[in-house]
Length: 81
Image (cartoon, rainbow, N blue to C red; front, side, top):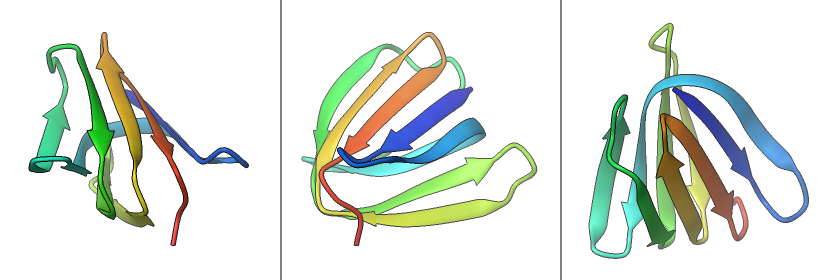
């Protein structure tokens, strides 16, 4: 699935991933291929991306929003720490 991670200033990551784990308002959640459509707010915490080659990337965010639809994920972070 495709993910783009951006702040208001720049695009931080754009590419294919196997999964993403993010800090939702009610706790951490994971999105895998075929996930149902979702729009949610994010709280401060760690966003973990697992790339298709199993490489793991971690980003500290201060909050934001995430939208998932048709195996495309858009994550807009307020700011990265």
